[in-house]
Length: 79
Image 1 (cartoon, rainbow, N blue to C red):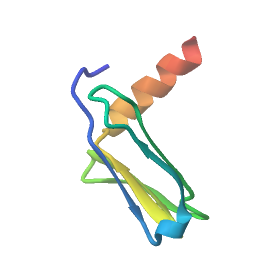
Image 2 (image 1 turned 135 degrees about the horizontal axis):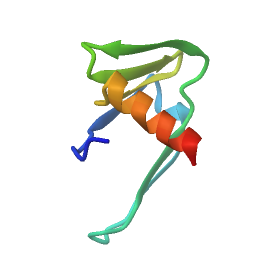
Image 3 (image 1 turned 90 degrees about the vertical axis):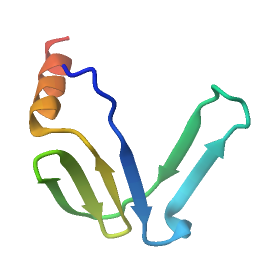
Image 4 (image 1 turned 60 degrees about the vertical axis):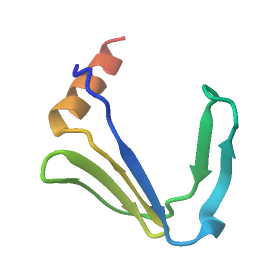
């Protein structure tokens, strides 16, 4: 699987759909986002390089190709 870095974005309709945002001041501390995308509206690939999951309360995007997703899922199933 590709060793490239993958960026992401989360867009919410309202901050009331966020359950947790945890950010530490420590340089290498974890960051946690939890919330609700709501009812699934659509899952699609934008230009073949961005997986977009749209719910009625938000949108999650990650730069991940169909090939990378398929490879990752196949690898997980073989474990």
